[in-house]
Length: 169
Image 1 (cartoon, one colour):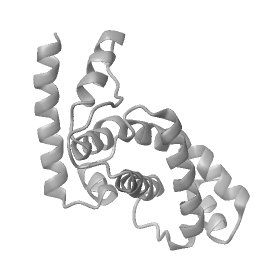
Image 2 (image 1 turned 180 degrees about the horizontal axis):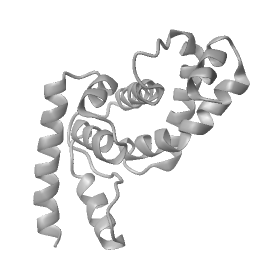
Image 3 (image 1 turned 90 degrees about the vertical axis):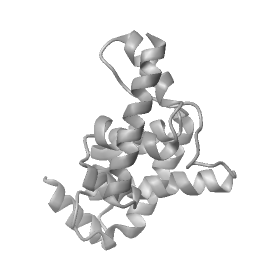
């Protein structure tokens, strides 16, 4: 069954259809949240579960104006920000510990360590645009930021990563 049909059934209250949607999107959403949570798998799983529950409660509000995955990622990002605010963390400031990918194990480790040095918005924008494959426009909607701000976060994050990776090599 295609995603559109599953969305229609889920919006009508079909829990089996929503379960299929969750199974189809959980890996990508958890990966995004792991990067935001700086590698904390348990936190990412908790935030993903809360995001999927909120998605179920609000599924009838999904209008199909964008990708369902982007809609879920927006919910997850808000969950992450609420979690950080409750703990009086500064998600918009520099913090330390994230995940990302690269071609070799050594490069993966270097990139992971470099990602930990980025500010949360830079880390989120880079993760969405490069690791998750969203366009800048989609990332802007997910992060609820102006397009220019997302582009700036991506550009600044790339510059910082380049400098950090040059030092590491």
